[in-house]
Image (cartoon, rainbow, N blue to C red; front, side, top):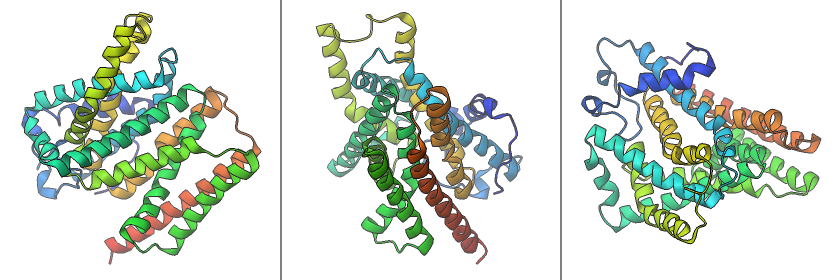
Amino acid sequence: MQSVRAMAPPASWPALSFALFLRDITPGARQGGLTAPLARPSLGSLSAHTPISSAAARGGLAAAGAFLIWGTVPVYWKQMTAVSPVELIAHRIVWSLVFLLGVLAWQRNFSSLRPGLAGARAIGLNLLASVMLTLNWGVYVWAVNTGQVIESSLGYFLVPLCNVAVGSLVFHEKLRPLQWTAIGLAAAGVLLLLVRVGHVPWVALTIAFTWTIYGLLKKRSPLGPIAGLTVETLLIFPVAAGLLLWWHHTGEGALGRIDARTQAFVLSAGVVTAVPLLLFAHGAQRIRLTTLGLLQYLAPTVQFLLGVFLYHEAFDGARLQAFSIIWAGLVLYSADSFWSQRRRLFA
């Protein structure tokens, strides 16, 4: 499939890609759709009347829309600084589950949940993934609402390099020289933050670590993106719902005690969580992995720009040097991945 060229202004991508995506999750289109594991479809799975370039373009718009939403989501969480991050995550879990169950009901595909609940091993795997995801969400929301958007963006910049490091340590994958160099540059950037700024970037490291482990667990799961997130939120739902009910009983909960605007934002947490996931799943099935790999940098880049220019967070010369070293590692990693895939493609 060909890579995607820009077909609409970036500001219109989320709305346009969601509109394109809607027709693909109707009940009649669910076979091989978003409830299936993420995989590149065969040429035969595409409509005979749909050019491959058109499918790739739709996929590119959907993926770009997902990453742009993830990039701008700090603006959303900033509207709820009056609510504690722990309560926000509990609401996110509860309302995400409600929204996802609605999607599965629309698709008439509750059977897709069965593999994730079939046996102790599957439940344990998904429960651990749920814990990692909850920790990731919690640290991220806390960081955003305490003025650490830049450091949270660093965490997602580090994720690709953490994936490579975990591949080497856990799966004993042989790394290429440029991959080792990229990991070394990332480590040097983190060390520079520690030495020059006197600060361990624990927010960034926690976000990168939990997301990397979550991704590792997802690779071992047979579930597709919607079914996977549904099972994960279902398993942690009793804790989240129990906390919300207790806080409401003791008068500490936000709902009913905050202004209507903030309550509307809280109740929309499920939609804000699930929609970019659906867009990402739609896009990942239709575009090259190299294209998807480059698009993933949209989210932390937008977050970084928001932290610097909208929220005016501290970003001095020492931080610029550290980020520049880490960015250099990402450039090497991306270039190495690109050339490696080209060699395999034309071998």
